Image 1 (cartoon, rainbow, N blue to C red):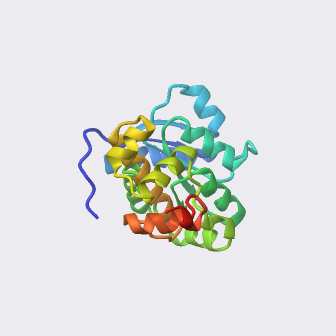
Image 2 (image 1 turned 90 degrees about the vertical axis):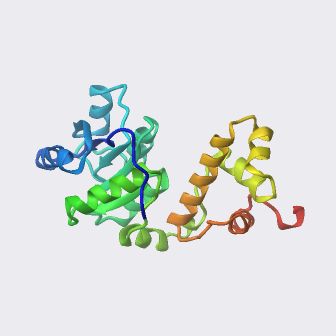
Length: 220
């Protein structure tokens, strides 16, 4: 897979309650061409230190010493506009599922190398959700995961597009830009992809919309 060239370096931050991991991550960023923007031992600390943080990707451990809830942590970080990569020993499947359900893009075990973490960061920065053995195991062990967690707007765009509208028509119907409509469809495809439910074609998107009750087959 060839990624497009970015106009600027990928901006990254890390949330981990181990000083050594934060320092090692920061030291490695220049080697991989990343712009390091912040680090903290908790999500609250990160957002208090840098309230206007604007990162492409934030790396976060699952279990933090402050006892915070992983789903809430992921949600708070996503609200800053960043993608979230979980970097953890991943020994608790319930926490992995909670993080993925909340919108984390992937999980990289701490046993992996910095090169593998950097590769995941680059993919996620491009909007690509990365399905690993750990995320697949979490998904397969939870039947609720089989339904994509689409936002209300994503469901609207998918409903129109899958039912036969062109992107231009979808944009006009919802009073949004064509590029915005395309971004929504790209995110929908990414969410289905991470579930192992291919949706690369319009026909596959239609099937997924029917399967998940977004469209009724009788209405088409």
